[in-house]
Structure formats: C-alpha cells, structure tokens
Amino acid sequence: MMVHLWRGLNLRVAAARLCGVRGAPHRTPHRQGSGKRYNVPPSAEFVARVSGIPTMAKLPHLDSAAGLDAAFIGVPVDTGTSNRPGARFGPRQIRVESALLRAYNSGTRAAPFESLVVADIGDVNVNLYDLKDTCTRIRETYRKVLAAGCIPLTMGGDHTIAYPILQAVGEKHGPVGLIHVDAHADTSDVVLGEKIGHGTPFRRCVEEGLLDCKRVVQIGLRGSGYSADAYEWSRAQVEECWFKSLGPLMSEVRAQMGAGPVYLSFDIDALDPGFAPGTGTPEIAGLTPIQGVEIIRGCRGLNLVGCDLVEVSPPYDTTGNTALTGANLLFEMLCVLPKVKYY
Image (tube, rainbow, N blue to C red; front, side, top):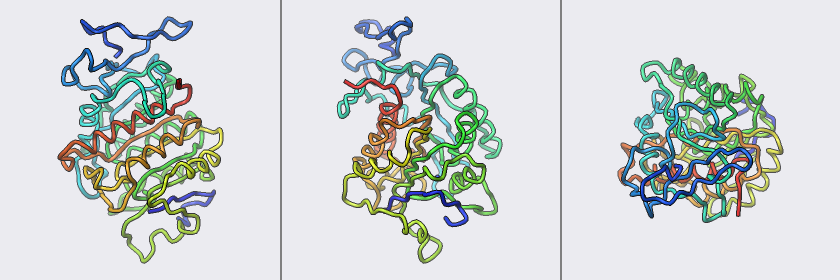
C-alpha cells in the first residue's frame, strides 16, 4: 500500500433543522446578521432515528442548491463498474445509515451545522442505459450546484462520476488540486475499448487540463496488476503507509496543495475489505478507517471545492458497515470545509 505524490508529470509516464418536530426543543441557530437559519440534524433524544424519510443525516431535502453553502447529492450509477455491481444503490444506503450522525464532531470539536447551511438535494437523474449521457447529466447538474455557490458532497455511485463532476468544477475554478484516496490509480486509458469507466476518470481529467498535476496526491494504491510492477513509476515517489499514522503525511500534502482549490475523491475500496467489504473491486491489505479519518481531517485548512465518497455497493455490504463508514467519512468531509466553526 502506498502514497503516490504527483509532481507535475503527465500520464504518459503514469487522479434538520430540528425540523420543527413536535416535542423537540427548537435549536436552529441563526446565521449572524442574515436572519437565515441553519439546518441541524434532529437529535435522537427527541426524534426516533428510524422515523421519517431517509435523507443524509436526516437533513431537509431541497430541490436545488440555491441558498446552500454545501449540499449532499447522490449519483446512483454503476454502469462504469468493471467487477461487482451495486454502487447504484450506494447513495440510498448511505442515507439510511447516516441516521446515526449527530450535529457535532466529538473528535475535532467541529460544528458544521452552526457554520454552513447544508441540505440533501437528492440524486442526479442518471441514465442507466447510457454512461456517456449520464456523464452529461452529471456535468449539467453540478454546473448548477456550483453556480449557486454551493460545495457539493457527493455520494456515489462508481468512480466514473468524478470525471464529469471535475469537468464542472474545472469550469468554475480552473485546474484544481486532487487528493485521491483509492486502492486503484484510475488512470487507465482504454478498458474493453471504452474511454469512459471507473478505471479511467483521472486520465481523462488530466487530458482535459482539469487537474493541476503539481498538486495531485494518490493514497492507498495497492493490489495485483497487469504487469510485473504496475506502479513502477509511482514507487519512485512513494511513501509506505502500513501500520502508521497518516497525520505527518497530511502535513506534507497540505503544503503541496497550498492555497489553491482542491477536490477530495475517496473510493471506499481504499479501506481494507475487512472494514469495508461492500465495494465493487476490493483489494486486501488496505487502509484502516482510522487512517481514512486521518486523511480527511488532515484536509482541514485547504480550499476544498468539492468532495465525493464512491463505490459503496450495498448488495455486498451485509452488515451495513460499509455504508455506515461512508456516511461518517462524508460527515468528516463536511467538517473540514472552509468556514466551518470549531469549538
């Protein structure tokens, strides 16, 4: 397992508000000076977790990103998957498991719901019969989200979705830095004759100039390959991360990312399948959930302009732990967005 730090080389050599619920105390803090109210997950002290229609963290569901600082959005597609299917059901299951989330981050003392107006804006209306059309639909949806000044927090879906999302992000912000957490590099050129799939998104992004390749980091790469050393180039600039805290690594990553815009893309298969078995392309000897949390918390202070959590496949997630982990990692992403308040 390795950390791959890109250094400007191109791919030729290698991306409820306490909802007004009856009987619940009214704890919807106001945005200072604006009169706007924040949306706060309802407390299970007063509202049963099993009640209501599932949304991310039981936040309000809205039809658009207008007026939001950040939004959870699902992209339920697995048409780009090369092995196990099922990631199309990921957003739904992540929402179900997210009922356990609370308003504050006890580990970091972050108070995201006192800082940002956040809601669940539902799913992209994908075309399960046409992956290229789905990419167009994703790109158009995210253009609208970003135009509203909202930071998208995406629930996948397979990793193909990072490509059209980054197309929209690139239109708004120009080339962005990328922190890519994954068992696989996803930089293949053509797979089974197709250039669009979950193994190719970051090559497409580089080809289109969507990434600032001096500010790209890949963490968690491992597994078997199609040559004697599939990561031969990567090993020249690698750090092993078995059995160690990734806090020091993230200090280096923050320095590399600097003040420019950064996108965080987290494939759940970066984690060891003992912790996250519900995924399409599992690889043994992966990161621990603790290391995954360290990576995300290490992004605090960066100019994050979007995040995704992809490749949760509920049919292979018999306990729900993979989706539960995904929900918690998305909450950690929310907690490190710019302008979040910390106590």
